[in-house]
Length: 316
Image (cartoon, rainbow, N blue to C red; front, side, top):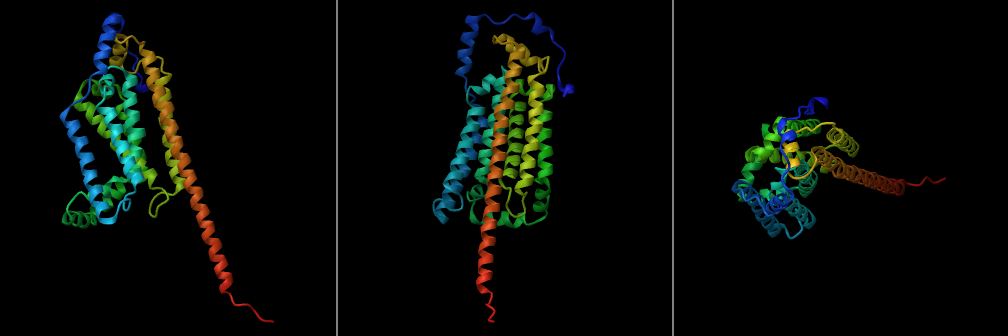
């Protein structure tokens, strides 16, 4: 991880004095009242919720409430959607441009809270019900083509794992991470890529144990190795001896924080809450694996009993 560490201490960090306390408090209050009303973000979130609501109403209207998509899955979708709103619309968005730790909270909410909730809700089928019947049939026919084979290859667990690690690594390069903090378009692209790969990652985890998908054992290995990788990454941020991002080092001083305190807080946020969620996923997979083995054993016992009853007794 040494190649990622920024070891050049730029001159503004040394020479620029921090903002005076009264001015900083006044500026802080302004930031806390700053919400992100960027049209592209608002329209995207409105479309996401609107399409799902229309699909849910159509699906439940046809199959009955709770059928096709359970109420729990619908609740998980809206919980994930609300988490995205908190991450990208609330004042957290404004703070993410000023403090490394706030930026890391954003990423944790998007990748470790919103993404697994939405992956578990399985929104794709529900969303398709928002379309007219003829469109759904057309998409179904179009999907049974080479596109389906391509999608299966792209979403292979090994490919998803590598993409997940690659996206996290590339976006944490100083040139990109600092650009995202200073440019709204790049920042939005960063968020979309983080959420998209995290959604595919947790979708792979959520589908473990199903026919044609990863076994629970492989799923545990998949999730545990990702947890180890991100833990090493978080530790590199936390225990680095110099700031990774000169932009955030300068900003931290302006807001009354030592640059390394802000960076260590960011690394700890990535490390502790993120790894606890990964660990919870591992435990959930283990629980489902044990339940699967228990059901298999019960079915085998029933088959053995039935086989014994069907076997004719031998008369002496």
